Each structure stands twice: as C-alpha cells, then as structure tokens.
Length: 381
Ligand code: ZN
Ligand code: ZN
Ligand code: ZN
Image 1 (cartoon, rainbow, N blue to C red):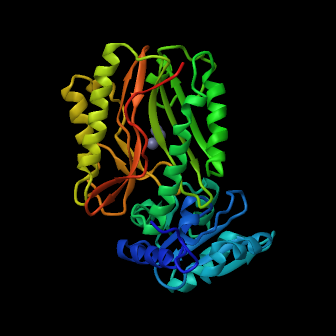
Image 2 (image 1 turned 45 degrees about the horizontal axis):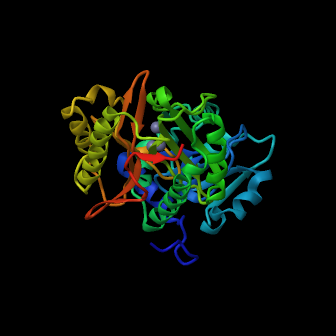
Image 3 (image 1 turned 60 degrees about the horizontal axis):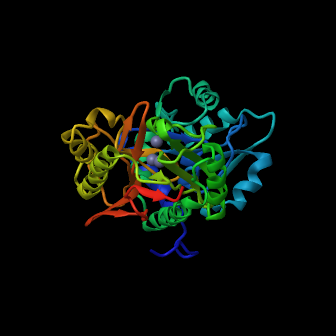
C-alpha cells in the first residue's frame, strides 16, 4: 500500500466536513473536541491537553473553527492543521475562551446550540466550561459523530497501521534475544521497550510480559518475577508511530522447552479460535458475530470459562477505539474497519495464552497487518 504523499495527505478538510454532515444528520448542533486523538484525527493538530482551552468547534452549519491560546497559535500554523485553512480564534490570557467559542458558534448557527457534543475524552474542566457558556445547551458524547468517521480507515490510514504492524512484528521476531530463563519480566520488558523505539515507533504504549501464572492476568504488565524454564509467556506489546497510528500485537512463547501436553492441547484450540474469528470478518458481518466465531471454538472445546474478555477492539490513533468486537455490538463491519482479533485462554494460578493480530476488513475478508508465527514459539532457554 502506498504511503501518504504530499498529493495524498493523511489529514484532509474532508474530515471536518464529514463530521459536520454527520452532526447535521444526527441533530447535533455543535461538536467540540479538545486535544487528543479526536482533534488530531479531525484536523491534524497534535496538541497536549492542558488547562488552557484548545478546541475545534464544528457547528452543524457554517465553517468549523479552532479556539486556541494566542501563545500556541504558531503551533497550529506549523501543524498539518495550518494547511487546512481553518479559521483560528486566538484568545489572550485574560479572555474567556468559552465565551469566545460559544459566541462564534452561535453566530454561525443563527441561534444558540441546543445539543452540544463534546469529545469522550475532553476534560471535565473544558466540558463544563462549554456548558457554562451555553447554559441552554444539553451536553452529550461526541463519539457517535466522531466514531462514524474514525472507525473506517482510508487507504492512507491503513498504510500507517500496516507500517506500525510491521514494526511491532520486527520486535516480536527478536524475542529470543531477551526472553530467557533467569531474567525478570521487568528486564525483558525494558529490552522490548527499547526495541519498540528502535523499530520505528516514537513512544511505547505498553509492554506486557506475563510469565507463568502472571500470564493468566490479561493486562498484567511487568513484575520482578524471574522467568523460568518451561514457562509459558504472554507478550503483548505496542507503540505509537510518528503519525500517531498504533501497533498492538500479542504472541505467546514457551521458554527453553515445550510446555506440558495439556498446554499444547488448549493452545491449538486458541489458535483455531483466532483463525475462525479472522475468517469470519467481512463487510456486513456484525462485530458480535466475529466475537462469537472465536468464542464458539473455545467453548465447544470446553475452555469457554477461561476466555474472559471480548475478542477485539478497533485501533487507529488510539490503541482501543471503536469498533469493539464484543457480544451485544450489532454494528455491521464495513470495508476499512481495523481492529484486533485477540482471543485468549487464562488459567488462574497456572498460565495464559493470547494470540493477537490487527486486521483490516476488506471486501474479500480480513487482511492481517501482523505476521510472524501464531504457533506457540519455543525460545531457547
Ligand atoms: Zn487489552
Ligand atoms: Zn494487545
Ligand atoms: Zn489489543
């Protein structure tokens, strides 16, 4: 897939325009997003969240605009947002930025907005500030508007996720250098973190090294436990690339020797479940059907009670975002949706295993953005 070029930028004005259309369609008068992935997605401005208000306001009619502290206006211009030509309303230290935002939105709409959607991760400080400046408005979450866009990746975004996936695959391919008997999870994790950066990420999101019984805790991160020969070890790692897109990949390893026979038995079931869920992916299939495809295999083999989490989550500028691959989510998949397929089996007090790939839904089914063996890889001890 081609990388985005100057002629095909990652962030275009289409995004705010589409957000405006979706807001209008759903009856939202004003969408307000603040620093974080929603802001970066919609206009390319990767700002740090802080107490001074920075916000993109998208009224259902009229032009969207940015409200930024005057001291940071040059940063907007220097970011991809600067090329979009969005109007920037800069506020001075003693101005009321919420009044500025409310006034500009009301002028565009012709009357004060009644329904105002704010980003799901907008600070309460800012959401309540908007509410205070628009006392007649009802606040609601922005995700129903923004997720409609963010869930479906453009080819340029898929290329970014594929690059992130290839980078994290290179880290997994080197696992034998670090994951050895006699080393602590923390030592192994530090080496993995350095490699995540060396292999093309700008930051590390998480390094889970769940050895032996720690592997039975799906979100265990690192501990001082010493990895032992014969341990089964869950390694789930991911980071952020320069464009903000994330990697997230789990492989399960055995250290030094094959684990006992029962592990091989249920690991084969897990591998089949991961295959079945990946094979179930296609446009029109619902998110919960993909979850069920994995769960049915594990349940039928008698291990269902040990698969204690959803099958997957969307990924993009956030590691966890819509669509969530979980029972109850009747959202039909659409080509361009990117998400993890990561069933696991967790045996408390003993060990666990998970196999996780990021996949993209295409008209022909799933394309995996992670490669590398999904078998239980036995590393030299
Ligand atoms: Zn997780
Ligand atoms: Zn993961
Ligand atoms: Zn994941």
